[in-house]
Each structure stands twice: as C-alpha cells, then as structure tokens.
View (spheres, rainbow, N blue to C red):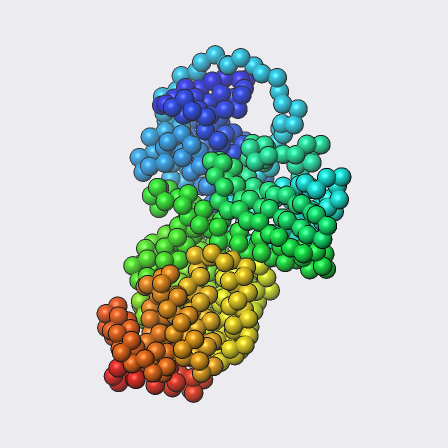
Length: 520
C-alpha cells in the first residue's frame, strides 16, 4: 500500500519513494528509506532485530554494525541524530520502535514508474561505498574506448584493495543500460556514497585523463585531477594513472568520511564512522589530537571488538604515541602490539594491522620483522601512499637510505597533497640523517614541521641534524621547543624509545642531541 506519512517536520511518500524534511528533499539510500517506512508502518510495537533482517535484508546475514549504521542513517535523515532519540528509540536487547506522532495522508499523485528502477537495491555493508563509472571516451569515433575501459577496470581493481571501501563493479547492470549514468542515478539506484567518474581524450600521441570524486548525497566534488601523458607503453601509462588515482583517493575519502560525523555525538556513530573521526585528529599530529583520537577509537573497539580497522588504527596510534613521547613506552608498545595482532587475526589482508605490527617491531628493534610487516602492507595495497611511507620509515631507521627515499618519494608521488605529508617527509629526513647528510635531514624536518608543528619526532631530529650540520644556535633553539612539549626528554629516554635499529645509528643521534644541548 502506498501512503504518505507526516511526522515532525518530515514527509515520507512510499509511492514516490521520497523523504522530505522542512519541505526540502533528503537523499537517502534505498535500504534506509525501506527501514524508515517499515518502522513507521510498525510504530505500534518494538521491531526486533530478526524482524528487520527479514523485512529489510530479506533474510540475508547481516552484522550488528551494518544494522546499527542503517538505523543511525535513518535517524540522521529525519533529524533525530541527537542523544534524545525523539523519533526512533532503541530498546536494549529488544529492538527499535518509531515513537513520533504520525499522520497518514492521501498518497501523492502517482507518476509513471521509471523503467530502470531496481526493485531489490543492493544491500551495502557498514563501510563507505563507491561506484566507478566507465571513463568516457571524448576523442570521437571511439578511438580510445579500449584504453578508457582498461583504466576503468584497473581503477576498480586498485580501489578494491582498500579494505574499508566497498567498490561497485563496472559490470553493474544499472551502469550499462545503453546510457551514461550520472552520480544522482547511481546514488538512487545503488545507494552508494561516492562516485568516481571521468573522461579520456587523445590527440595524436598525447593523452589527457580527467577524474572526479563526487559525494552523491551533496553533489560536492571532493577531489579532481587531470593527467597529461605522452603515449609510450600503453600499459605502463595505464598502470601509472591507475596508481596515481587510487593513491590520491584513499586519503580524500578518509577525510570526507571524518567530516561526515563531526556534528554528531560519539554514541551516535557506527564503528567505521568512529574510525574516520579518529583519523581527522590523528593527521594533525599533536599530543592533544592524539588524545582526541583515542576517544572514538576506544569507543569503536568497545561496541565492536572484532572490527579490524579500529583495532589496527588503535594499535598504530598507541605505538606511534610512544615514539613521539606523548605516552610512556609501557602504555604504547605492548598494548599497541596486542591490538595490531588482533587486527591481523580478524583480517590478515587489512594493511592497517600490518603497519601497526611493523611499527611495534620497529620500536622493539626487530628490524627484519618491521620491514617485512611494512612490505606486506605495501603488497596488499600498492597504491597506498601511507603504506609506502611506513616502509620508507622502516628502511630509514635501519640505515637503508636508498630504499627509504625511494618509497618516501613513491608516497609523495601517489598522494602529493596527503594530510599525512609530514610523516612522508619525516621518514625521508631520517633516511638522510642515517646516511650522514644532516643538512638535508634538517631541511626535510623543517618542511614537516611547517605542515605539522606538533610533530615531536621531527622536532627532535631537527635539533640533532642542525647540531651535526654546525648550526648550533638553531639546534639549541629547536631543542628548547622540543623540551617544552617533552620535559622528560633525556639520553636515557632516547635509548629506550627512539627506534634507530643499530647501536651506531643510535649513537649518532645521541651525539647530535648532546651537541644541541641535551644533558644526560
């Protein structure tokens, strides 16, 4: 039966499958719309989990977090995302019920059904979702159609390596229906949150590939790039473009996901949303932001203990904080390693878990284990700028400067405006320092600190590098800045917590710090 439900300042029209709030249309995924309609229709009772699975997921197996995510999305769509639960109330261990006052109105005038409307929208998991639309060949006469199709296929393969991202394949029946789908079409039919679209143009031996990442709910373009290339080895060009696009998109999506949940209380967020919020703090690389990141990460692990991304990022953050001096080694390395190991047990193909485990091994000066774990993260997602940066750091602290700089430059090439750029530059700085180039190390740490002034590790390395380069006044001034943030900094602390992998490299760093004015 088609009805119009009027409640609060909302109107839900089941015939048109439209939700309006304050008179304005609200974009909702098909599952979220169905969930709202079902709860309102059954508002005289508490709807159990089994009832929801049968009605919305048609009996398919679904995780608690997926259901939690859809209920929260429904609350957000109707303005009920605060702590009060004015309209959709959760009853512990029983289910949920729509408790708002509802008036049933006559259905709106029927409109002709759309021929491409899917009766059974694809159920999406509790993570961000993206559809890759076929790149359009704008060259005329289909001259570059095969190249465009090849790039599209490779983009889907590359982006599918991002474990927290759900990627819709290009052979979706909706995308190929004899017309070019736009972002709104895809959002409506597949319920995806983001769309990657673009075009290919060729003239002679020159190629221009343009790509855009669009938020389907708001129409906001989160990222766009244009690549101009001379055509040589067509597969090499295709691989380069694919890696560049996939590498740039991952941090952009993480940033967009973090922003989505900023206006909501942590108790209203699903585990993935909590992880994304934590990232927005971690990227700022200060002690205060580390503390802020811990709140959503611990909450994510609390409500879903078996959620690998939360375990992996929590483990990494704890170990990194111990290295920075924001927490003690005992507080960071042991607990961080335990979270990392659990993340890999839950999903051994999640790069975040391997990065966390690698950093733990680095802090324990188990060089081979650290490099192997970082290399595993790169192999799982070769387009991940962050993974290349961490492998760069592992090589750098071991004194393997050539490999460290190569992977650091790969990270920058993959994501040239990455929010973690200070980490990329910091690893390259360590490589120059261990190779005996303190002036270069000082230059790279200076750039890292310009981006992230709270980066404690870069503050210490800059002080030691300036001192060994003979710039003693600048070194002492930099050490004073570092000690204001870390009063307990001492040679003993360095021996315990700065992960140079050989005694010779560690002594070089201590020598620089002593020259900068650090006392034993």
